[in-house]
Length: 253
Image (cartoon, rainbow, N blue to C red; front, top):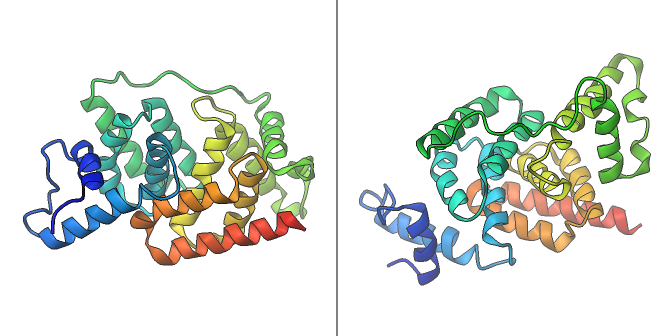
């Protein structure tokens, strides 16, 4: 077996020395995996290289693949992802995975950026402060999920209302209002975080609907799942497809 032409093109960018570290110890596996993940999969669904790279980075964070993330990050830069975009993907993951699971990725991206000669910190991307993060965060929720989100921060039982407030002010006010990624990209990577970590199907269905409302349609989300599959496996990918179908059914009613 040998690499396909398509896989070889991507591998040349992934592995500047021309070979995977497993090529000698696991040659058969390396060849059929590379032909699938870097040849067959990218040819399906029509995502451009930059978008596919963002999807892969978000999927690796969601599935806790820190070492693979570090190896894929230079290729993502080659495919057009900017340092700011990559940083924003890592930052936003904290809202959906927690700092404990994102900490290794923050360390990894800083090491890669430093090795490239990037000056840290990167330019700030915040557009809110303590005075307006709640207001602008709730507006972001409305923009993505609809008018039913108005007043969300004050809704729900009294004992858990603070969580809803945090969702508006922190998850959306601190993260979604930042520059560096637009709403469509942010909803896309959120979908990837949820699909890749598993066990979040109610939220995944809701965010599939949010994606569809702002222009990331069903076909696009299926393409996203297709590109994640080599990195998160079949069970979580099939669960994500089920959530996309459920979201599409709800929106059709």
